[in-house]
Image (cartoon, rainbow, N blue to C red; front, side, top):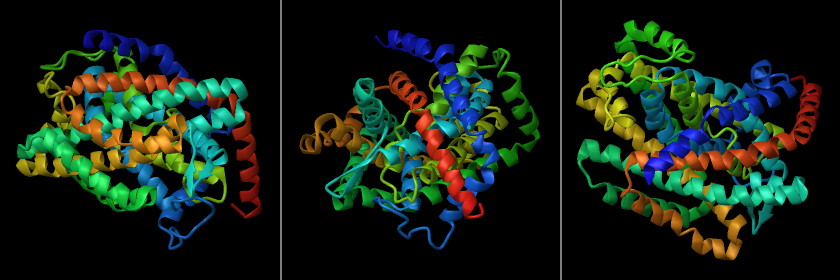
Length: 456
């Protein structure tokens, strides 16, 4: 059964879907004059500048979460297992060239994410004091009957995506890491994660999730940054060759080395694209459901946080994983059992010894737990859309049941299922983004004019 799933995954994430993803981001980039590059001074000031401003937690408009809480909740959801296990697995299957395609997807994806975030804020709605928004909402509100069909397809796909990503991949990766280092049963670990999350959510809902995420995200990124930089610096002599292999094998087949079977250019492109999008969620619209709850003065302003989010997620964190693995020269020892997070453990242990395993385990626990918890905002938005507010309160129980059941599946099975669902989520959303691009561009120009009058 799963052989057919693997075959379908390879077909789904072939060249056509990769071209669609890149083309959409490129089209939106052109329409905005490559704002992610030409407007870096503006979006940096209105995102990073606000994050470190003394006013960062002050209310800036309607919404539930402050901009800081919204971005940390989103980063908690996006910066997770995909940045560690996903990147390593992409290198194992697609070769070093997969990193190049991750970077390319990230650069054009910055405008894709800015668009979906901006539209989500513009078309969000408020129910009983809580805000709901995302692709389903802007599809239905702005695209008429066709939009309703897209929204229905997207809503079901999003439900399946959260079930496989948050409830399966994030928690199983966390459980496997703790099991590898401390020998605790994975199902017990999953149950503990679920109970803690249930307490957090019942005690304060979305606002509590935002508060916890704002506490977890900064230390988790710092810990992982230090760990990876230690590996890279210890193997600094291999850095030029590692960077060279990323560009060389982006356009040429990677040779077989030791336990590494080699990779075709197609594999590099497909795995780089699939894991890159899985990690930063550009084009998926998933993170936009969280951004839709943010307090902001304008949809485009919040959209800029989408650019910053991808910068942190892919350009920084994913690159750290890729360079650490390549500099540590792990590929010759890769086996089917170690492909993925096991490769990162090898890199850390080779530099830090057993202490490296503990460092990585802590980072994975923080990454994956924040990922699982952050996805709750997306899950409750999805279930409200599909089942209505009253029924969704009962359906939301699945968010706390599926993680324990997922520990019964193998990592490869879960990743393959998730790749399929990611494709099903992306296709209707990209169609909607292209159809709604005139509305986004109009908002973009209007906000730029506003900033110009303010001297920015």
